[in-house]
Every structure is written in C-alpha cells, then in structure tokens.
Length: 383
Ligand SMILES: Cc1ncc(COP(=O)(O)O)c(C=O)c1O
Image (cartoon, rainbow, N blue to C red):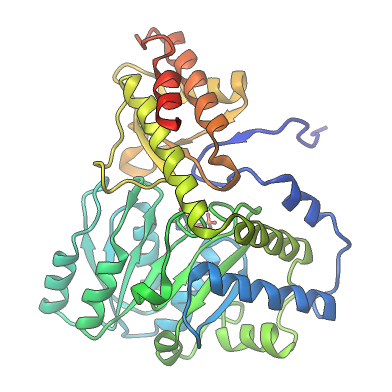
C-alpha cells in the first residue's frame, strides 16, 4: 500500500516551490460551495490582490483560471488568437516553444523568432522581424524556466506596440519573485501559476488582461477558458465551473503574505539569495548557463561538470538529503541542473543546505570540490 508523504522535501526544483505553513493551514478551512457568498468574497479579495501583484492598470481584468500554468497559457491564447491571427512567437526555450505551439493550435499564423537556448532575446531582432512582416500579437516568455534566462519583456513590449501589435507574456516563473509591471511595461495579457513565486500549491493560474487585450478578444473556442464566461462567474456570480475552495484559500493566503512582506522587499529577497547561490556555486567551480545580466533569480541553470553523472547526483540529493532539484529539458537534458529558489524556498538556509549537499554529492563522484568553499562564499555574499 502506498502512504502519504511524512517528511517534507525541500523543493528546490523548477517548481513547485515549498508552501509556507500558513498557506497549508488555510487549505484546511471548511470547504465552501463555489457560489457561497463567503467564497465569492474571498475571490473578490483575490482579484484585488492579483491586480496589485501584476501591477495591472485600472480597467484590467485579473482573475485565476482553474488549472496550472498551462491553463493560464491556454486561457490567454484562446481569447486572443483565432484562425489567421498573425503571431510572432519569440522562442528562447522549451516554454516559448509550448506557447508558439498553442498559438498554432488555436489557428494562429505563427512565425517564430528562435533564439539560442541559454540566451535572452534581442528586442532589435524582434523589431526587425516585425518590420519584415507585421504581426497582431507578439508572444514571449519572461522567465524561461528551461534555460534560466530572463527576457527583456519591457523592451519587447515597446517594440511590439511601435509596430502595432499587442504583447502576450508568460510570467509563470517570475510573478511574485521578479518585477512584473503589467501597467508600466505595457504588457497586454499575462499568465502565471500559483506554485512558484507566489508560494501556493499548483491548481490555479492567475491571468491579467489589460484594456487593449480585452479589446482584441476573439470568439473563444474553449468553454473552460472563455473569458466572458469566467467574468460572468467571478464578477456576476453565474455558475461556470466548480472552483476548488481550498485552492482559493491557499492563493488568497499566499497573496496576503506577499502584501505583508511587500513586493519590492520580496523581489530583493529573491535577488539576494540568487546572488548568494551563484557566489557559492562559482567558489565550487560550477558555472551557470546564461551570462550574468540575463539570469533569473528564481531559476538557476547550473552546468553539470564534465564526468559527473547528473542523474545519480540528483537521486543522491533526493535520497540522502531530501532535496529536489530539476534536470535539463530538451537539448539541455544531461547538461544542466535546474535549481529553483522561489517563494518560501528563497532563504539563506536553503542556499546553504543546497550548497553543502551538492558538495557532498559531487565529492561522492570523485569531483574535486574545495572543502566548504561554496557555503563560505555564500555566507560572505549574504553578509
Ligand atoms: C515558463 C513556464 N511556462 C509554462 C509552464 C507550465 O506550467 P504548469 O506546469 O504549471 O502547467 C511552466 C512550468 O514550469 C513554465 O516554467
């Protein structure tokens, strides 16, 4: 017979991130019906908090779609892309690829701007691509989880608007941890997830549609993701689907924790611990895939040293130290580890634990790692 987990894994992979006890406790509150006035009041509060988290301007529609980040992606695409919509898809990794594919599934005429995996896109290349052929929509992933790269979505949005296109952004691995300024940066439609920077379990997908995006809405082919029907439910209390009350509690509690911490303080926390981790990794002789300046604070793509069995190292981290990290995807399989420091997982303790455990794991494979150098460098960076 299988059993429920009895020990907590330290979730330092590409997501989910660790869930704080207060968020777990919130999920244990009594389950309410999906049209109960008390649940609807919590959903109203959640919408307001999401609007603040996205920094979305007045007139935007922010809510959480039932499902994971992929449902957020599909909800945004399903309401903006139809047969013949001209899409320029900036593809810098696995999740840019997924976004391009879903746009094509909804009938979009998709042109790709492919960028080497491990590098950020160049807004000038986006400008040139739009000059060669017009587009209605430019889509881009802000935090490319497969490569650890942060794309300059603010600049991409400017270029897109100059060329008369709206911009659709994946903020799955950035929202709640990196600045995401929907209003100031002019991001028109954005989707995210709950299980990374926000710090709740997966199961709801925050989305933001600004006024320009709402004006570009198409006849939505999907029933589950039809924004008009979702709006009827969230705003006008008309039944559409049976939302999970415990997931609403979790999201609302995680958003309350973010408001208490303060968004800027939270961004700084993520940056500080990313820098400490990088200092430690470098002192151990390990490098990151993206160049400095293009790196995420949430997801560190660490190059696997020559001669190291990366699968064995990950298994040992899990079995000996109870730590989860991720493997590389697609062409990066076997070449990188993906170490996430997100939400409740971005702390000095997690950085030091990971560095200490990684040192032990690398040594067990005969790798020469200077003793204690990683943790010492991280402690130095933290102070
Ligand atoms: C950038 C990005 N987009 C989309 C997704 C898909 O999200 P989910 O796995 O929650 O469906 C992920 C998942 O890690 C992601 O990292």
